[in-house]
Length: 166
Image (tube, rainbow, N blue to C red; front, side, top):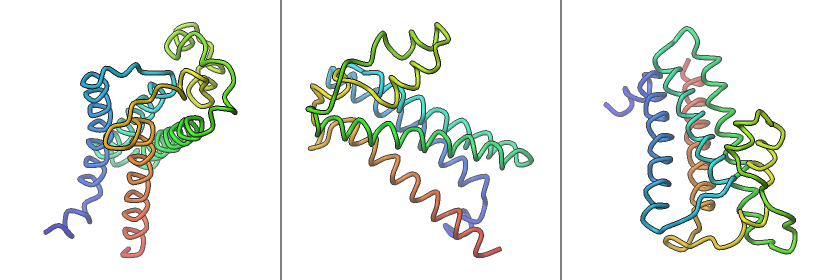
């Protein structure tokens, strides 16, 4: 039965979409429970999960546009893993961090300054690297990186196994 479900692309894409939204919900709940302040890079990673989740849900709901919507989901996953990897790197190399994220991710988005939006979300600053509380031994950006890597790995395994069977 499980093999049959894996052969139904719409159900698998729906599951990927739900996982992306669940990751955002989990990060939000952990932030509330542990009184964590969300930095620009953390917001960017959550937005990346939401972009990926929307892409997967659209791909599940709209089979004719599945190629384009899956690319949107893949873009979200790649942006998120890059941001999470950069933030994890910054946390372990504080001597290489310069400046701050600036005015904040949503301020840049509101002002239409997309270059600063992506710079704050992808490059980060000192406020994104310091004071990261560990949850089960890992900081939230490290959990985010792990979630993106697992999601990408499972997605690639499913994509390649689907193509081999066809």
